Amino acid sequence: MQGLNLQRRHYEFIAKIIGDMDVSEKERRKISLEFANKLRDANENFNYDRFIEASLYIPLGKGVSNG
Image (cartoon, rainbow, N blue to C red; front, top):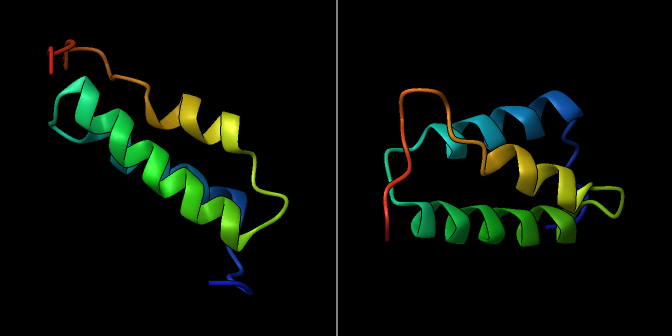
């Protein structure tokens, strides 16, 4: 998937979608890591750690579910 031309706003949008998913913390982590690995493969300047941190953010009111 080389040559993908995404900007920071696109990565932030994807991370927010993952963060807003109504899934267990375990499933959110799995999804986040899968996306991060694919995005890193597509862009050598991709900030893996920042994406993981942003996508694992749990919005207020969502709580943490065990999974």
